[in-house]
Image (cartoon, rainbow, N blue to C red; front, side, top):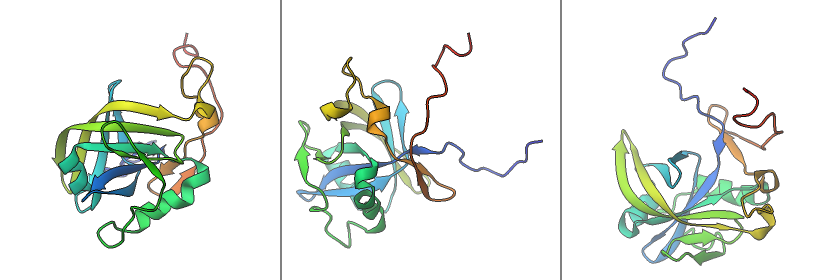
Length: 180
């Protein structure tokens, strides 16, 4: 028998990312687990309204979505522990500016540079609806067809109720095949 546990968000684990944006001419970064897919060419990044980075995203209309892997997880986690309004995070990572001007973390094997198309406010959150301008991928995580091999990438996953990080696990079947 199922038990109603209230209005609990149950869409976890989710990919862990570090968002990058320029604020006052300098890069800043924040750790985010609330980023999602909207169709095949849009993503949504949800940030609590008090985040320092939000002002830069609203001004420049660009941001980067850097997929976290285990080798730089500690640095990524630190970006969620300190506020950009209290501490300068501009030198936390080496970075390259994307074609649209978003700072992209060099250590990240996969980065999406995005343009903000719209901002949708919900209680306490700015939800940035973004078009993917370009996806930059280290060749070491591309398969023979030029697509991202997530088994090689091994993105870190986040689970909210326990605030724990997870590794990706085994393949259990092929989509649209096991049900036939």
